[in-house]
Image (cartoon, rainbow over all chains, first blue to last red; front, side, top):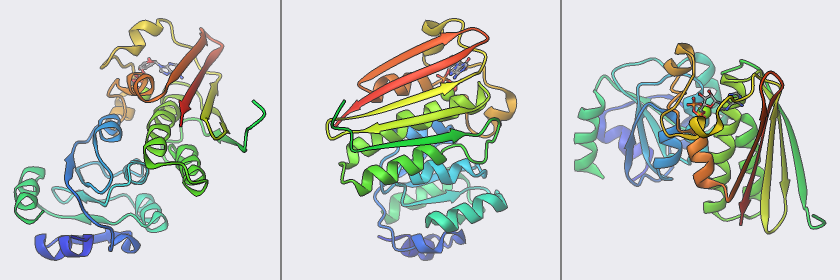
Length: 109
Length: 141
Ligand SMILES: Nc1ncnc2c1ncn2[C@@H]1O[C@H](COP(=O)(O)OP(=O)(O)O)[C@@H](O)[C@H]1O
Ligand SMILES: [Mg+2]
């Protein structure tokens, strides 16, 4: 499954990083502490977080995340939007909580 | 070492939460272009990113130097910050003196030095109160 497929299946909104839409997805990791994300997420993961600052994009790039899903309608900061565009990291947003996203992911992954 | 294929140098901006990760990101891209395997890229990225963050949130920025050779990647992070009073305590999982601001951005889990120790093959910390800290890490390929 690609990031585009995920957007369609979960009705997510693309907020940045359209160049990353064809990334392949394998699994999911949910956490807001960057050190834990760095060491415990795997490449190709959908990373679900409520963090919205530019460091989210840096960590997603360093861990080769497939994409980032921002939960609970949090707004990605403008400077993070431009970095995600530059790095080609798709950032998606939704009103759902991390739990709700995880439940839906379980059915589609 | 005579078989160094490339050296990199970066200035890590003080108190600039917005650019932290740039040195690690660029280093990772260089290593990827040189053909190092994903596992090496991952270990370098984790160890260097944690060190880079520490220079920004605990010190006043600093410099990052990377020596790349076929057998190992050596990363030297040097700052002129406050130094670390008790390294053993600082190494403990969960110990952190990070500010509220840093925590609100997702830093300050107290996992940085622990991660660096886990993912680098060698970790050497030299620190002097009021003078600064130098962190040297070697990741063997
Ligand atoms: N470069 C540094 N200069 C001064 N203090 C540091 C430095 N790096 C780490 N420390 C100290 O060691 C503690 C633990 O660091 P770390 O494990 O990375 O956790 P965190 O960064 O989440 O606080 C920090 O909270 C800080 O007190
Ligand atoms: Mg740290």
